[in-house]
Length: 104
Image 1: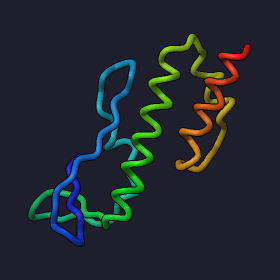
Image 2 (image 1 turned 45 degrees about the horizontal axis):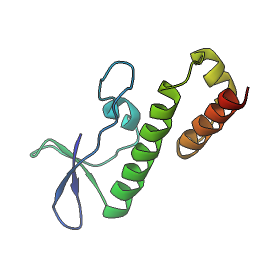
Image 3 (image 1 turned 60 degrees about the horizontal axis):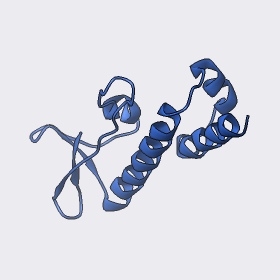
Image 4 (image 1 turned 30 degrees about the horizontal axis):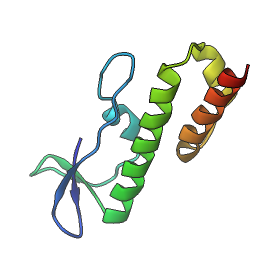
């Protein structure tokens, strides 16, 4: 997803690739979280701070999902372990789930 940084006008890219399908699911992840959209340029707009937060989150989430993809696990068990959580807590909870699989 292309985003425009409000302070600089610079265009940046956010992506997150599903390890199983290879599909970029950033639109699904960000759906409902972005409020500013530039109709003329057809791009979402973020502050630099917002972009940095999303970039860190997507990188952490991608790393956790990549680790999990290498482990034999049950998806239902993963979501039961994670439960309802804040989005920012998801990468850490996936990492904890990986640890439980590795130590079992």
